[in-house]
Image (cartoon, rainbow, N blue to C red; front, side, top):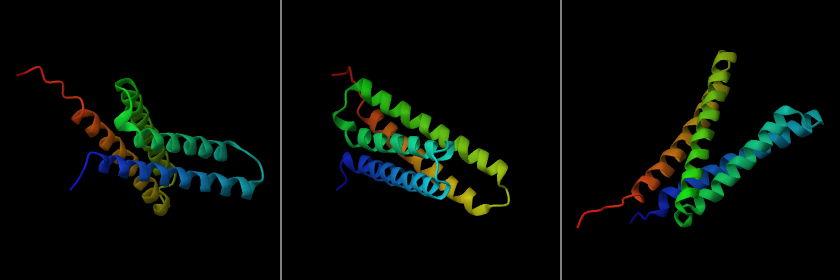
Length: 131
C-alpha cells in the first residue's frame, strides 16, 4: 500500500542521484583541468543545491508551512534553471544529440520532483471549514 512518504522518497532519491552526478562531473572537470574554474564551480554549486533539496524533501512532512513553501520555490527555480541550461545546450549543440537527450532527462527528473513536492503540498493544505 502506498503511503504519503513514497513520492517524497522518490524525490529524495532523484535529488541525491543528481547531486552525486554533479559532484562527479565537477571532480572530473577539476582533475582534467587542474584548476577550479567556472565550470567546476557551477557543478559544485549544483551539487549543494541538489543535496540540500534531497534533505529538505526527506524532511518535507515535518517542515513548517513556511519551509514547505521555500522548498517548493527552490525546487521550481532549480527546474527553471535546468530547463534554461537544456535550452542553451539545444541551441548551441544541435549536432550532439547525446548531450541533448541527457540534459532533457535531467530536466525531466527535476521537473517530476517539483511536481511530487507540489502535489504533496497541495494534499496537505486542505483546510476545510465545513462540518
